[in-house]
Length: 426
Image (cartoon, rainbow, N blue to C red; front, side):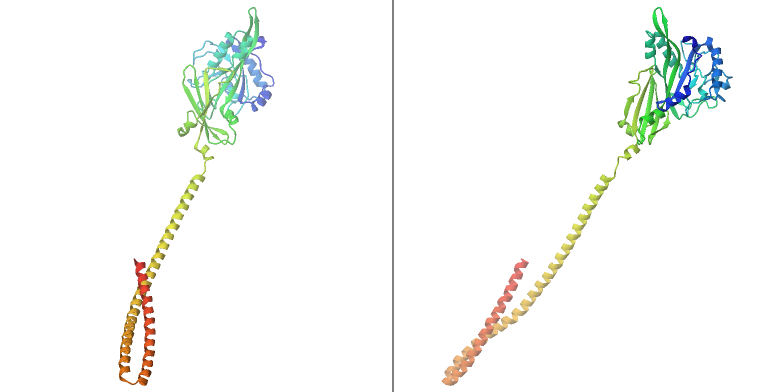
C-alpha cells in the first residue's frame, strides 16, 4: 500500500538476504525507500528507531552518527567529505529530480560493505544518481504497471572498493563492483488504467572478485581478466584488471594490464548481452593468458629428443671416424709389413739365385769336360780299363745331371717368386 511508504523495512531481511547472498553472484543486497523532501523528517525518526532496534546493526562511528543521526550524502569537494542531507539537493550532476531521497535502509554486509553505507542518500552521488533518474523516467513512461515492473531494471557504472569514507576519502582500490537496480513498483489504478508508482529500489552489488571466482574454476591459473566499461554518453572506456591465481582473482589495477605479447589469444564476452536489464554502460570481460598459463602445457621433451638425436649422430660419426682411422692405421701397418716381406723375398731370391746359377753353370761345364775326357781316354787305353773308367765317369755324369736338374728347379722357383712380386707391385 502506497500510504505505508517510505516507512517500510523488510522483516527478516538480514536472515533471508544473508543466506541468499551465499548462493548468489551478488555481494550485497540493498533496500532503499524513495521519497521527497516533505517526508524527510518523519523518515529520519522512523530510521533512527529501526537502527536502534535491529540487533544486526551497530551504527557506532558511522557517517550517520557523525552527522548527528541524519541522512547523509557525499561531496568529495568539501573538507568534511560527508554532510547531513537536509533537502536532497543535487549539485554534482544535472538531474530533473531535485529534492529526491533514495536512502539505504537495509543492506547485507561483506568485507567491503559495512554499516557505514546505511542512511546514505545515493541520489546526489553521480555514481548512482543517473541510474535512479533513468529508473524514474522508465517507470513514468511505462504503458502500465506490468511494463514498469518488468522493463525498468538498470545496471549501474563501476564503483571502486573499499567505499570512500570520511576517515579515508581516497582508499587504495582493491576491487570493483557495479549495481543492478530493480524498482519497487506499486500498482495505482486510475480512470485511465493501471499505472506503476515507484516507492523504492532493491539493488544487488556485483562484486567482480566474487563473480570471477565463481566463473573461473579453481584449477585455472595464469589468466588476466580485463573488465572494460564505457558509457553511452561519453564512450570513454575504463579498464580494470584481475589476475587469476589458482582460481582466485587478484586485483591488479585500474587499467588494462595484460601482457601485450598474448593479445592474440584474447577471448571476450559481453556481460550484458543477454541480461534482462537496461544500461547506459557496457561491460565486456576479456581473458588473456599469461606466460605461466602456457608453462603448464610446455615440455622440454622435443628439445631433449632433438639434442639426444644430435648427440647420438655425433657419437656415431665419432665412432666411424675412429674406426676409419684405426682401419687406415692397420692397413698402413700391414702394407708396411708386406712391403718389408717383399723386399726381403727379393733380396733373398737374388742372393740365392746367383750362387745356384753359378753351381748350375759349373756343373754343366764339368759335365762337358768329363764327357770329352771319357772320349779321349777310351781311345788311348785298353778296353777293360776304359770300360771301368767309363762306368765311373758315367756315374758322375748322372749325379751331375741330377744336380743340374735340381738346380734348374730351384732357379725356376726363385724366378716365379720374383715375377709374382713384380706383378703385385704393378
